[in-house]
Image 1 (tube, one colour):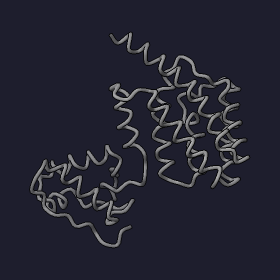
Image 2 (spheres, one colour):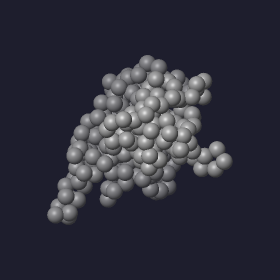
Image 3 (cartoon, rainbow, N blue to C red):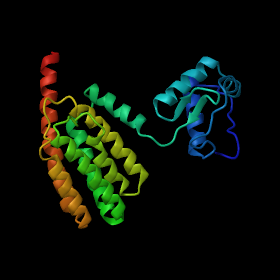
Image 4 (cartoon, rainbow, N blue to C red):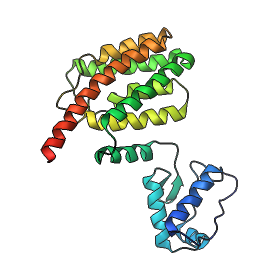
Length: 245
């Protein structure tokens, strides 16, 4: 928890809720507000900012949608500064994909570049505990595939990438990987079929090469798989465009 409470100044220009958002974001950036800190009550914020309570509510809703704050109910209810989560990034990019402002190929390219970087860092910094976690996750995935259970729309489809991110010991990379993986997971879930038969083999190969500290080979193996998946997603996108006309 921060030692001193945030102090806001009256808003005198622009749309009120935007200025309120900017001040709260700045307090977070300056370290005055920390993850887990509770914001003052709505009436107190209204008085400090010099804006209506509806303006404060609009600002809080905007910050909540962006993943900056979260609403908590109960005795200790109110709005709290969130821990780091990629929801804001994820929703923004997902909306752009839905509006066809970002092609699937761009997502794939970004994911390949990001995972290649993550693999390189994981090869440098990853511990045996990190690699053991990836292996255990791959074993769980393999067992579900063996049983014929659907995995395309489950968290297991993305946990492998998250664990690679964790092995970098860089939280920003983890957040970015989570965001891209979640967006692509929702797209993969819409596929009529997905290349599940070789996913386990690819993941085991990537893990083996990471343990051998071969980042280029591991990155290339995963990139090949992601490019193949991209072809399926682009084909699905073309079909959906035709049916929507």
